[in-house]
Length: 279
Image 1 (cartoon, rainbow, N blue to C red):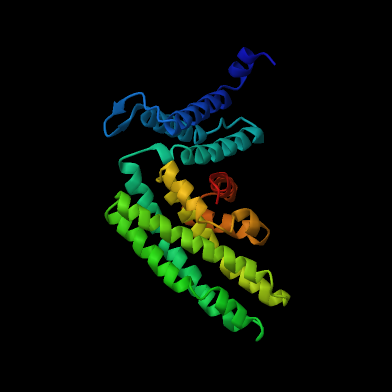
Image 2: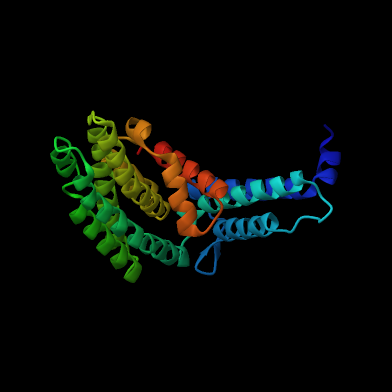
């Protein structure tokens, strides 16, 4: 296909592709330590990346022509999903106020975490008598881990310093490992009803912890992320067969008030980023 005519016939898609390319290139440059100078409290690369992401978001929300077909609506939805994915790309490389916004985002997840852990505490009563002790032992540390993670998240919001971030990194990785171990324990439960109840409860906790891990990862240095990954002995790939993608998508969509299609793309990108980092 002639690239010039393609741009002329599909200007919106072409513009979105260009903006995504700008965000991706800016992310790579920042990862390599190339800043192109300072801009305010951040860098030129971070500024360009942020502007490109914002423009992509506006483009994705551009109203379709009333006379257009359903294909236009589908195209707009896809652009919206790409806008959300692009938002994830610059997070590790944006400094200044982004740390505060990410800290607030982490704290915003804490009510969902507390609710999910409370559900875990009440799930044992629903299990077969032989399965309840196994589940209780597998999730014994959830309350303490949840309380610590919530406290560290709030401490980081109040003081987004390197020392507090290090404590938050340790807390979220430790909890994530507890969740992964619990998923492996659930796989050993032979009673189908009990196993499903356990997986439902643990997956709800796991979704929140993975979301918080992704947010912490986004404001952590490459060295810190590598250290966090080295502490993750039970990898996501190992527990992936026991993770409930549909539950995760529903929780993310509800938390952010977005369509399930967008939440699905976010969930996939978060898992991909975590796996590539070594979690």
